[in-house]
Length: 404
Length: 234
Image (cartoon, rainbow over all chains, first blue to last red; front, side, top):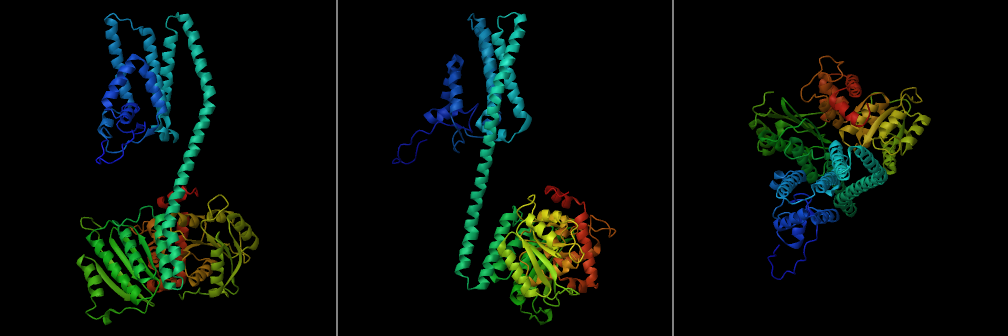
């Protein structure tokens, strides 16, 4: 990649890795191209020639096994998307290679060149079987594999084993008479089972260790995440509280705000979105609490998408709450019920009470912001005195187009 | 708050506090002794599930203030304590009552302890006076619903969406009257105020609340059972 700055230090060649994006089979050619700074088409062509000649197979498999796999940096040519959908997985490529090989071999045989197909074909079958089987071990699928995603993995592994075993059989029984074939089949199966028995315990242990390691890493990540959050929020608030410990109202406000935030983080789970009535109300209540230092309890049943009506309702609730915390006394509580028959909201305080008759006409807050606003949106608002305190009750009809 | 119980008991209510935070236990003790020293007597405390069960079975209190999240037992916290104290009677010969006390508002925590047998659920930010009243109410066999619990009940029984039981006995829905009572509690009304508002006696309000509690414990409604199943309670 050319750098736009002339003075920039000469960039070291990128590390040899196998990118996830832009790969055809296992990302070996793409990785090589990246590392050597050669167009990937050239590398692929060279690799194909080498593969056809024989030694390329060894080189390819070794590179595949020894090169670590890394997500490609975004913005590189030949990166994700359409290529992936065009060639869905390495299987299609393998199938194409086999067909091409068979065609070339057939042509060569016709033109009188002895390819010793008796040996070559079984070898090819073995190679294909190994690739199918080992493709499961590719790190790209390791997570899915570790999570134990069932039958597909097992089926592929089984298919690989069967194809490989078939290839070995074909190679070994090439010139033997039928009578000996069964002996050889049995011998091959016994050897495969023996090898499997030897490898299995080790494999199981490695698998278990990998799982444990992965779980430990997930836990560590979570702990780090939590520590970061607690540091940013709780520790900062505690420090503030220590410094302002003389001012009890301020301390209570800080503690309350922190509690709400932590609660949203612990139990929220993304439910409190401002695009919903519940989220918008929680936000407004948070603002009122922070501004006045008086706790407000919100109880909400049901929910509704935000629209013009609920927007007006939220503003009216805010105004009523501001009145409650200014003129009333705590506890201040808000109950909102959203159902098919509309939304009802109740805002209550325990102060000396607010009398509609004695509210001067010019008190724009109550008349306009609460009653006027609700009426304009087809709803209603009224307040009444309780033994201690005042309760506002706001109603809003269901959104238009929805029959109650 | 003026909602003292209708008839103060002749002898103080014997209470055990179960919470894994020593600071919180000390705080609750001090607060209850200050505001209701004559009505409430804290006789013991416990920091975990196993100690709690041992203390409750030994001292036979009237009321247990129970934290929802506790170490020990089978890892289910307060629910394990409730399971370990089934059919234990207090010295007065009445069942030991449990009042859940938690910092959590999560619905599954509420449903877990209520279905396991707690008579009420309040959050730890409750004032000392309110807590004392709640303890006395639970000691008398009544249920204690915080506004938040009432809101949750309305939600879980679909009452907010207009579902109303045809007959009172139906377990999966609230009756009209129960819904009204729950709505008023959710609006922050004391039992006394609920009674005045609906022109019924406080005793009737208590009956309705207890009946809602029973439905909450016995209902097989989908939302309730789904949570309970998630916690392997059913």
